[in-house]
Structure formats: C-alpha cells, structure tokens
Image 1 (spheres, rainbow, N blue to C red):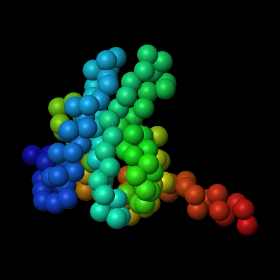
Image 2 (tube, rainbow, N blue to C red; image 1 turned 90 degrees about the horizontal axis):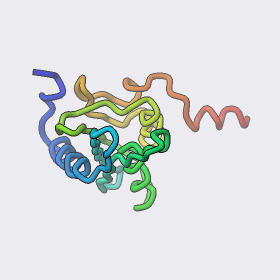
Image 3 (cartoon, rainbow, N blue to C red; image 1 turned 30 degrees about the vertical axis):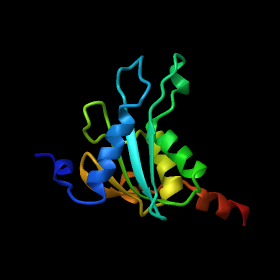
Image 4 (cartoon, helix red, strand yellow; image 1 turned 90 degrees about the vertical axis):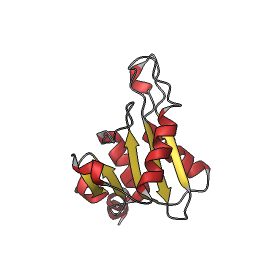
Length: 139
C-alpha cells in the first residue's frame, strides 16, 4: 500500500472529497486529464479549484491556480492543508509552478497530502524563493 493511501481522518478525507468534486468540474478536452484541488484556509474556509484547459496549451489554468484565485476572491488568508487529485481520484503532486504558487499562499508550514504521504511545503519546495527574498533586496 502506498504511503499516501494511509492518510486518514480529518481534515484529509473531506478535503479529498472536495478535490474529487472539483475534479469532476474540470474542463480538460485536450489532455483528458481532469484535476481537482482543495485546501483549508487559516480561518476555517475550504477553497477548491479545477484545471481549465485551452487550445493554446501554455495558457491552461491548473487546479491550484483556481484554488488560489478563490482564496483571494473569498477574503484571502493563508492555506494550511492542501490536496490535489487526478482523474481517477488518486492523490497527485502539484507541478513546479503550482508549488511556487502554494508556497506564496501557504508558506513553509503548509501541509500537503502528497504521493509520499504528508509533507510540509518546505519539504516539497526546499529553499523556495518568495516574498521574503524581495523584502531583503529592498533594504
């Protein structure tokens, strides 16, 4: 059994359910690879996203992009727990671009359910470049 399959209990089970629901709303006519994502926010809200493809592949929106957009649209805050699923409902890893997006909106402490089990964002994207690096340059 894969380590990720051993993750049980709240908030993970409800987050995965919400990610699967979002995945079913994805628009993926080109790749046929729908993706859904769900995350908890530090104020208790849950935000979700799904991928939205485009014939010009480079402008496709990942599920994580929609999730972060919903985060800011509904009041902002910091992500605390995150999971992403593919078309079969199995946990998948965010791409590199989306790891950066999640880091910016959850920080090093954000906990992700990954294909290797639970990991912090600091483990998934070590030595990440972020807003703190830009602040240091202004000094």
